[in-house]
Length: 448
Image (cartoon, rainbow, N blue to C red; front, side, top):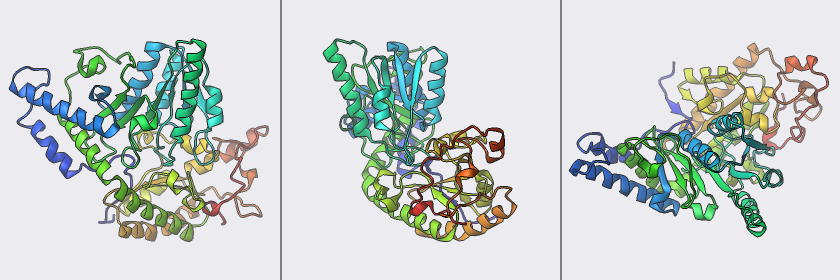
């Protein structure tokens, strides 16, 4: 086991910033009052809560009363979806590449009898705007599209989405239709690297959480534009504008606000630094390892600004991603095969499949997400061990994908999206959905 430690899973969680811990400490010890109490320690906690809410609102260009603190990003997403649709009825439109905090709640809404439409994405993970516009009907009440994807780092075309929703809103106004339509975005991955002004983004609801921005775990926030009515997930004492009953996590809220403030202060400089490291990492990977594919927007194709600065997601063909992680861990390197929230299963990444990649690519995907403490020396160390791991795993792999004359995996190897190659013979009538892999780009060099 290596004595060196390189953490490259910042999309899963981040270490607690020292300034954040310092801000939280009083509310973990002496200032322990309940914000609902009228005596001094309660008033002290209530003031801290109000100050934190004002800080978050100021960063978002929102009003303090529009900020609802929750126990996680997942809870904030659930409050947005169930809150809107249980209050107003109607239908939901979302994307096939959303986090399971959206997708699994969407499936529950379907079980509850509500209509959900799942919009597809292109080869880089960008939502297909034409398909989205078609999916929005007079029954649509909520459109939920994540700001930056947690697996591929793809930044959504937010202005185009907001424009499509605005057009539908104006159409309803002209026709006298009374059903509202709202735009929600999961910004948990975006909060550390992208602008968050809700007015400029054109969003009505926005989710964030603390663990992705060097804040505490177990705290999230939902921006809800003033005037939007939601049904609470549960009832109780009526805290958080009667939308999230329960004694507030004052230390967590204070820590979240401080973390968000620091993150936005560092956003430009840290984003530039990580972009350089990200692009160096990607370029070197393709120089030293054969038969790999970059998943998501490709910086070499001028799409670097449409991918968050810290994200590298690749598929190393002819290996299993989970096995690769174990070998990396032995070398002191911590990464992921996709969403850390789904690591309890061995299912292939639904995000990679949604890009049109075959099953084998999804199972071979690895996600490296850089952070504030990541250095070039860390990346060079990772690069030094990956070729050996790749060679070892390919020697024992039962899979060796064939290549055709262009040097890319043969279409004959794949019967259909989401299906292992060994099941192809039982499904001869399924046509390949590997619609764009036959057009390799610089970072789709999978020559053996």
